[in-house]
Image 1 (cartoon, rainbow, N blue to C red):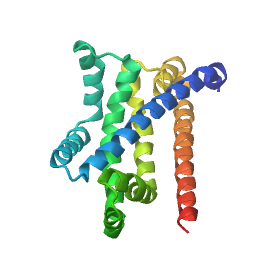
Image 2 (cartoon, rainbow, N blue to C red; image 1 turned 120 degrees about the horizontal axis):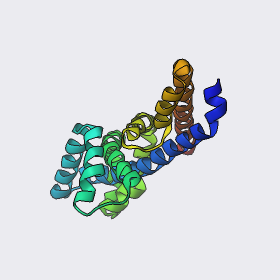
Image 3 (cartoon, one colour; image 1 turned 135 degrees about the vertical axis):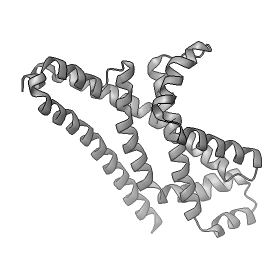
Length: 216
């Protein structure tokens, strides 16, 4: 277990980078995905078209291609927020397309009468969505959203290819230094990812229970 005792601080820093990448790209995905989902059910045809185009492009483009575009392409056109944020943007936009579809399925699960009742009392579209439909939709989509963010957790490993010193990057370095302990290194790093996924699942379960209590 020399690899662990000699490198535990480096491993923790690697998972720290993984969590930073997950947090930033996850926040981008949640905010952007919610806005695009609202656009998809908007009464404005142009907004619906833009939203459909966004989902079609980003959901069907490989994440690695998007990272390559943001990592190498954005600086070429004068847009450079730093390689870490550029990679987070790629992951955020890619994941936002899946968040959009998850939330849209939540909209479909809300009884149509809820939106009609909101319009009947004079609420405009934005107010009826934000105060009536969207909160109910979020209650329905906690499990699929948790699955989306679990997938994002695994996708953060792609950042290692571009020099981000997250957990997978650290694991590759340990493989080079402790070739005889590769199985233990792999299992140890995998356990770290499992713990992150477990926390996401726990948070999702906590939200489900809270929503269930509030709905009574």
